[in-house]
Structure formats: structure tokens, C-alpha cells
Amino acid sequence: MRKTSTPLRAAVTLLTATAVAGGLLAGAAGTAQAGTAAAPVAQAPAGAQAPTTAQSADARPAAATTPRAAAPATPSWLIPLYFDNEADGRKRACTGITLSPTRTLATPDCFTGRSEKDFAYDYDLATGEVAGGGNRPDYRAHPQFSPGNRQFGVGVHIDSHLNPSRYGRPVLAGSADTVLYQAGKPATFHSWAAPAGPTAQRVRHAEQVVVRRSADCAAALGLGSSLPPGMICTSAAPGTPEPAPQEQCAGDSGGALVAGGKLIAVSATGPTACVTGGFRIYTAVPSYRPVIDEWTRDVDLDHWTSGSVLGREPGPGIFDLLQWGPFTKDPVDSTGQLFEDEYNLLLQTGDLNRNGYADLLGRTPGGTLYRIPVNENLEPGARVGLGTGWNRYNRLFAVRDLSGDGHPDVIGRDASGFLWMHPGTASGGVGARVKIGVGWGQFTAITGRGDLSGDARADLLARDAKGDLWLYRGNGRGGFLPRTKAGAGWNTFNTVVASGDFDRDGRQDVIGRTPTGAAYLYNVNNQGGFIASKLITSKHWKRYSYLS
Image (cartoon, one colour):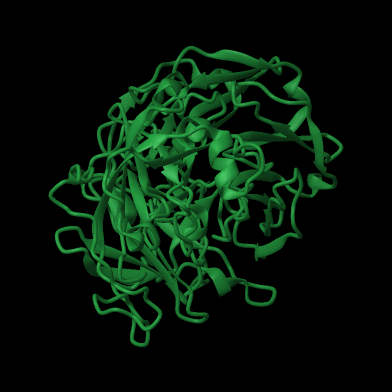
């Protein structure tokens, strides 16, 4: 492959969508200058109140902490998290679990929001003190999360500051590890506590605990006869010192329950609540393993964004990366040359090789498919061949995980209307194709990326000749539930593409482009349909021969 010597960030023009119709940029991710992406600020601007080591006015009374000498070593992948909103004063001290250089597992209500008034902070792990931060954090949260009973309590922080490689990552428990969290089994709980309150210095906390019966926990916590599905509970192991109460409040949320060398559960304690009567409830990792895996691998070329599309301009090998942001200039030019004329199709696949950064798939006119790794600076690495014969497909796109195995997948439709899935592999490749549908030749557009229906499973959308849009909900095993109608009149568009969370509002999006170049963004409503559309550009996307 011939590669340009220019880093990909310079080689691909980072374009921004036009803001129209009543100030759509209220939640946009900073101001972008032409040719570059706007990164979150490195530290809080003047007026923002960062957490300090001094006890705040609303902090809980200080108390002796659990003796550190007797505590097990804190896992390297466990980190303190802190979010606040300077407009309404909300403060959230939680614990995070490093999943990759760009993704951290957390509880959904640890986050305060995505606006310019919302801030996320980093910590020096040696001192437990704040070491920097920025505003406009981005994240994903389970669409069915219930703050009341804490069910579906998984979220992922999309880190703007990379997690160092020395943090490592945990081994996640899976469906075969149920023995690790059966009643009576011992485990260790770890967190980064804030004994003096959410804005104070953080300390490592560890407890020896034992898994309890669901009925015992539910009765003790007033949750009925049993815990909600996908949740477990512990209490202190017999004969162990009672933890200081202040270490079971701020910072407890998101803490790690470890057994057998694996992460088996995440504390579901609310970020402003405390452990009740020694009983701590958790979100069981095996119950949400497919979601956690998919969100870990759902990475855009710019790793701190949560949605984008590629557009191919006229001419050989010219591709543009289209992202949400303020409109600063005509976003169509000829400076986005990438990989010269080698590829007639370029796709974002998410993190296919498990290094924490996005990969590209490039198909040559001769039908050879390559995986192109991209690093944190948007610089391409050495390409890896994935086989020939890929020009047999007249529609080819990547989804984050349709098969339910935790790896991104590639979907293709052939001339006979058969729909095929090439499941991603643990080695960064794709496996042998599997037929997952027939009769797909009736559709004039097919697209997909992640969850479009609110069940945290990857889905597909297909438009028929009448303009009706159909939702094919993924079943998490490479197949589909019965289709449902998601809309009508979609033949207005000559292109329909799933973009991820393009406008950073926490919902997955679908973009439709008209023949005149106008582009409309549709937020999914997590119930199989869409919220009212937003015009993101009136004409500037006409030039692209396709969007992916």
C-alpha cells in the first residue's frame, strides 16, 4: 500500500456540520478551527470550581479510614473519577474501571452532563489529588438504566485524556463464571473513596466481602423478594474489620468486585448515596458483558468523539471525516486526500484489533480488503490484508457487534439479495461469512452501527422502494427479531447512514442526505423510532459520492 507521509489528522480534513435552526450547537464539543478537531480544554477555565484536598462545606465529617496496611493491593486499572456541573452545583465522586486507553467503565448517573458547564477531572494516583481536567465530557449510558432500583447500571466514559498503558485492564467475568458470585463465595471490593466528601482527596479502599443470597439482600434493602435481574449483593466477610462509614459513601459508586482474578461486578451504589447496613448491591458484569465489550470497541477515528461519518469526494481516494461542531467554512474542499487512489471504499469499524483506537477498512477496486490501524494522533499504521473477493458485495458496512461476541462485524449484501455477516475476530481480522438474511435486494438503502432501538444490541435499518424505513432489531446472536416500521417518506434521501452519537446528546443517530446536499440528523427515541429531525447542513454534502 502506498501511504501518504502526512499524519491522518492532516490528511483527512476534519469537517464540521453547519449549525442551523435555532442554535443546535448548545451541546457541541467545543469550537473547531478549519482542519483540526476541538479537544476539551486541558484544565478548568477561570470560574470553574475544581475539587481540592480541603474539606468542602457539605462534606461528611472526617473519620478514621480502613487501615491501609491490611488492605489488598488496589488493581492498577481502578481509577478515581469526579464530575461536576458548575451551573447547578452537582458533584459526583465515583470509581472508574479502565477498559482501554480511551474508555472507562462507570455508573450512568456518575456523569452530570455534556455541556460546557460540565467538567470531568483526572487524578494523580500517587497522591489521590486532582491533576487536571476539562469540560464537555462525553459518555454512554445504558438507555434502560433505572436510578430507583439501580438496574442496567452500566456506562462508559469516553476519555479525552488517554489512560496510560500502565493502568492495564481487568479480566472481565463471563457467562461461564457464575460460580464466582454464588451465595457464600468470598470476594474483594475495591474503590477510590472520598472520606471527607466528593471534592476531597481520594484514598484507596478495599474490603473482604462475601456474596449474599438475593432474597437476603432484597429484604435488607427493601427491594421486595429478590434483587432485579443482573444484580448481586455482598456484605462484610465474617471476622473482618468494619469499614469506616465515610469510605462507603462518596467514591463507592462504580467500585470493583473481584474474585478469582476477574472483575465480576461493579458497585451500583448511587454516587450521592451510601452503602446501607453493610449490604452493597452491584451490577453483575456477565449480565452486561456484550454491552461493555461493544462500547469498549465502539471508537471513532477521533477517539474522544462518539459519532462521525466518512464522505468520499470526487477524485481518486479523497475522503473527509465529518463530525459535529461549529460551522467555520465551506466544509467541502480537495484537501482530504487519503491513501491516494488505492481504495474505492473506506469504512470506520471501531476498534477491531483491541488496542483502544479505531481501525479503518479499505477496499480496493480489485476487491481486496485491508484493515488499517490508526493511532491516537490519527496516523495510519501498516495495513493488514483481510482477503479478496470483497467486490462481490454491492453494499458493505461495519457494525459494532451484531454477533454478540464482543467484536465488530462487517455486513455485506450480494447481487442475489443475500445478506452476509463476517464476524470480527480476537486477532483483528474477520471470520468466514455467515448468511443472515435473504431478500435484501428489495432495499435501496441498508445501514447500521450500534443500538438503534434502546435494548443495547446492535441493529440494522433498511429502506424499501416505497420509502418505508424498517428496523431490524439484533437478537445479540447474529440474527434479528421481527422487523418493525421505523418511518415513511425516507425516499427523500439519496443516502441514509448510521453515524453513532453524531450530535453528542447521548442517543444514537441516523443521517439522511438529499440529492441537493442537505443533511438531516435523526436522534433515535430508543423505542424503535426517531425524534424530530435536525437540519445540519443545507447543501454542503452534495459533493460526496457516498457516506459511510
